[in-house]
Amino acid sequence: MGVQASMSQQDQKGGKSGTILLLTQVYVPDPASVGQHLHDAAAELVRRGHKVRVLASGRGYDDPSVKYDRREVRDGVDIRRLPLSSFGKGSIFARVAAGVFLMIQEILHGLFTRRLDSILVSTSPPMCPIAAMVISFLRRKPITYWVMDLNPDQMIELGKIKEGSFSARTFNWLNRRILKRARRVVALDRFMADRLYRKIDIREKTDIMPPWPHDDHVEMIEHADNPWRKEHVKDGQFVVMYSGNHGFSTPVTTVLQAALRMQDEQGLEFLFIGGGVGKKEVDDTLEREKPTNVRSMPYQPFETLRFSLSAADVHLVSVGTDVVGVVHPCKIYGAMAVGRPILLLGPDPCHASDIVLENNIGWQISHDDIDQAVKVLQEIQATPHETLQEMGRRAQEVIRRDLSKDGLCGRFCDVVENRT
Image (tube, rainbow, N blue to C red):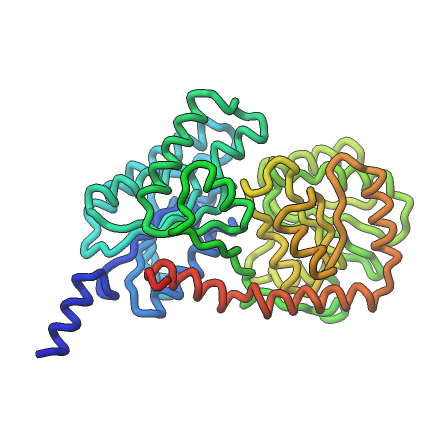
């Protein structure tokens, strides 16, 4: 009788019998990083005994021609994919329209989700937090808000809208509403948290933790044992790789221009892998200049990620000068997990420079300084192999010690369960 009463009390307090509703646009197998991180958290919550339902787009975020199953159970996570919720990233109107349709559908599903316990939502797209607020208000359920980027900050810094415009003021009003309503807020780094605090003081309910590397899918593979490198890279080449989303907030122009100047450098190759709006600059440069030392490739399948990342000798990570604390340089973790040094294209200080410079695992160069980029790239290529290997080992040690998936994903799920 006492046990039954205890279990009943746990249910009333929002125990593990209820459903955690996860609202997003992108979700695995979509290659966008946010979808993989959300799935990692959802799968861990299922492992802990929770029921998790995901509402996501039925089509690819980067490529809307890719269609996913309407319903699926993956690692115990119940996934419902919604129509008319991704029209590609070709225009602001298409992205806003997709977000609005997604928001309406998520609200309707959320209102009728049985035994709803809590809501987990991120910032992709901005309409998902609105859906979370509506569901939370009408169902009286708490929200965990995972801030992975900041708008309108990003659009303002990139010159898309003006700071005092109606759209910027509307965005910030919505930001304050969701930040105030959320039970817990997770920011990815100290710079992002500072920006949030300027909107509204939420220090008492904010946790700061970076996203974890997908270290169950990445590992260091020596070049001689790497079938991907053997297929795609000539023997003896020194590869500087950028892998992931190419965005307005992660420009690679400076290194791309440095590569054009360095076509006479023997054995040096620049490999740009991934997609996104910024990839057009790389592809247009290739078509126009036809450089001998630069190649472009699409996103690689997730199951081959450890091979493609390990094929690099050095990984390029870019952080836009004006977007520190607005977006987070997630690419750095995968590169560190495969034991490769980092070439940071971005300002100091920022979260990535904290990691690179404090742990001596790479180099930092500034945007628009092509001369410096050429000089540093020549220095990198001349660095002894043993020194590069030692940098890579230190990078892996930082991942194991401070940034492992088990540790960070576990901490995040503790926040969702309101254990902190």
